[in-house]
Length: 326
Ligand code: UT7
Image (cartoon, rainbow, N blue to C red; front, side, top):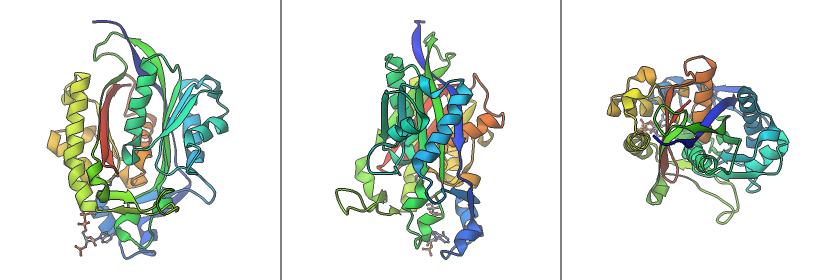
């Protein structure tokens, strides 16, 4: 096998805003119930960013923790990529705000807009910079304040989402070109713009001039999710050269417990190998995978050297999966 450069996750970090919103809290706002939300989604609670607390605030805190975990400082960072669909401002990018707030030197910083698939897209993008020698220390962040995009009169969407951020530090390390290498081993990214109407926000700078609110045909998105995610999972494993049985932990985007179970059933994956945080976090869009990863590392389930598979689907539609060894 030939030697190569791999992008290795050397640190993880997360941040959740303090305010907890329970299903019972939402039942006071819209015609819903704790029983319906738990049965149809698995969600028990979500976090909501405080007044004046922005996506870049959440992102900065998660990034700070990931740098500490990696034994790095802001001075080391030469690339910041943030997956987000809820930037503080239409521009500049959240990534440049994180750069400023952390005090990182002049480098590369930009956002990736792939909605709930944002972290998978951002990680795949960062991987390309790292393996080409264009970054020695990269922050890949998923950060969202999805509660700010909710129509609080629409019970079919407002109960599903929450706020939060997760981050990883990615650094180049020599590999042997085998599946025993640490680092990102395989990626599959997809998009199908013809399905825009299933999940979108009904505003923007060049249409309404407003931010808009999230609109979703939930059951259609659900059906697409199980099929599309399953295909991408298989494709990413093939690209990595690993069998699904070798994967230690599946870390899915956390939209709905029934989607996690549907994908696991379709692919014959033991649910005990699936990290689920949907009960506590709800759907935090691009933040959900790095949040779940950081939680699994913090509680000792996910260990260095293990094989991980991340996957997501979101508005666009976009979807994708990636295999990495921690
Ligand atoms: O992050 C990426 C993308 N997002 C997703 O992946 C979400 C995908 N979709 C889903 O998770 C599910 O489709 C939902 C949780 C959104 C909905 O579950 P469902 O089992 O597909 O229900 P449904 O949309 O078919 O609605 C069933 C019923 C409807 O009532 P009728 O028409 O049967 O009388 C809804 O009005 O449930 C009703 N309903 C609610 N009832 C109480 C919808 N939302 C609520 C609610 N509380 N919050």
